Image (cartoon, rainbow, N blue to C red; front, side, top):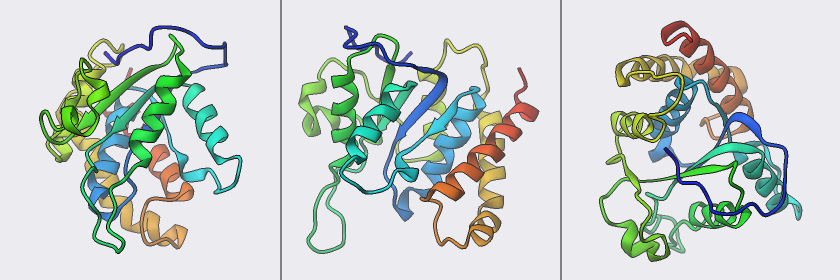
Length: 209
């Protein structure tokens, strides 16, 4: 199960079943983005993301509140390489939001760290030594497999095959959802919400209670 921070800093309202997804928003991550939505909803969880939060001076506080109000959070730290757009830079948002999560320090919130390469996190974020990262190898099936490991004690226990069914439903309907929303990619509030609703309905039918 996800690692629990040791102490509670202050008491906040926590939405049972909400899971904050701290993941990259880029075209190369699209399939894994769908996999995280499919996998978490299969466990009966409700995905949350920063996609609907506007860029403003209150953005950081709103992100912090979104994390603190979620029962779980998943932090994918697999995007540590330099991007292709000048000036070439690594992605800092994901480790930064993980740091915010650790700083919240609330026993009611449990967090998971995911990576694509074994032991790379020991170099990229050595302060997490002693934390076991879930290694998905950059594949859809890997993400679903590692979610099954992370949430092994969950009441609802979907199989990887069932999660793959939900993923394929999202994959096959994505083009229509993008067209209906007038968007070119799924990394926006409208399409994210539509994907979550579709995944939840599919999970209820495929996995059940």
